[in-house]
Amino acid sequence: MAPAQPTTKNTAPNQARVDSWTWAVRLFKTRSAAAEACRGGHVRVNGVAAKPAQPVRPGDEVRVRAGGIERIVIVERVITKRVGPPIAAQCLIDRSPPPPPQEILVAAPRRDRGSGRPTKRERRETDRLLGRTDN
Image (cartoon, rainbow, N blue to C red; front, top):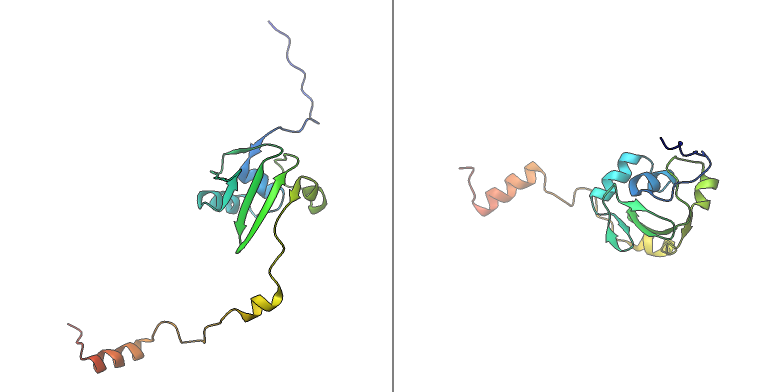
């Protein structure tokens, strides 16, 4: 029999699942949210839509669209366990574009309350006006 290979606990893995890595470096609050984003096509690895189990390696570019904001990060170090923010920041290089100026966010049109879908009463009045019946 061949002797058992010595194992060391300090060796970092050279690859990890993309859902696990994005959760571990705090791009998502939960791993299930990370997996759901992968299934929904909101996570790309090297320009290709990623499934939750796709492996990431150091040097890969990961694009994440969450909360209406796109984050572009480069994998610096692979981790599988969630760590604190200072350590998580060392595991990636953030290449995300700066957020839009506040003036643009404020200038976005807002819809007045109630101006969307008509209420039941308004719908009945419109039906009466147009001569529609409930048959």
